[in-house]
Amino acid sequence: MISIELAKKLIDHQFPEYADLPITSVEQQGHDNHTYRLGDALLIRMPTAEAYALKVPKEHALLPKLAAHLSINIPTPIKMGAPSKDFPYPFSIYKWLDGQSANLVHIDEDALDCIAVQLAIFLKELQNIDGVDGPEPGQHNWWRGDHVSVYDKGARKQIANLENIIDHKACLHLWENACATSWKQAPVWIHGDFSSGNILINDNKLSGVIDFGGMGIGDPACDLVIAWTFLKGKSQEIFKQAMGLDADTWTRARGWALWKATFELCYIKEKDSAAAAFQKSIINSVINERASVL
Image (cartoon, rainbow, N blue to C red):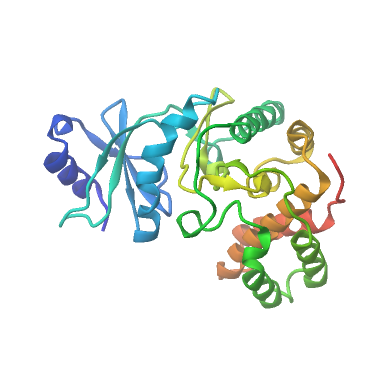
């Protein structure tokens, strides 16, 4: 089991130059990785399974190249630890980035409107990166950036399993419309897991974007899901207009949001819980939204 004690043991054995630094847990641990602060300026990030460990060398190789093209802070790799008898996967030491995950802070409407613009600027900068080769979608990033139909079987099964609590006909209609469109331009850089948990906020402003394990080259629609999972009302419209993308791309984005929300809802046992209500609200938003160039 990953713990502070294990993190300290790995640091002591592989990076003794950091052995005297205190190790503390972050406010909330992620699913794919566990993170601990290492002193004031560093952090240690440890994948929780082999599939997530595939992302470690990718991030170390590519993040410094991407950072040169971005105005928003992203993780800076410092060291990569090797698999060992104590921990079977590679792990990372990164520079610490100030800020709290957006899902852990209260953000007022005015600040959210400004953050929507900053999120769009980040994504457009990322999408406009040229001259840096990246991986195509695949197992390494759970096919983010691929055509949304890569999850066709799963999406249809999820919708069928939820037919008693969602408008399954409207969901299928949206899903089929999304699958009927495609990205007709050159593939672009994507983050791959652009969610509120991976967005850092400091002083009511976007201060950083983290967890690039899902990055790759492909269709940008998957990164637009943030419009429904984090933004709302005016901020949502500001974000959509700032992105300047075509109606088909937004339809695929709604398809990605539908797939993810139905996936999450299927695994929530208490279908009347607040967590379930949040996923239902995402589903209702994407199936009721008018497809247009926004």
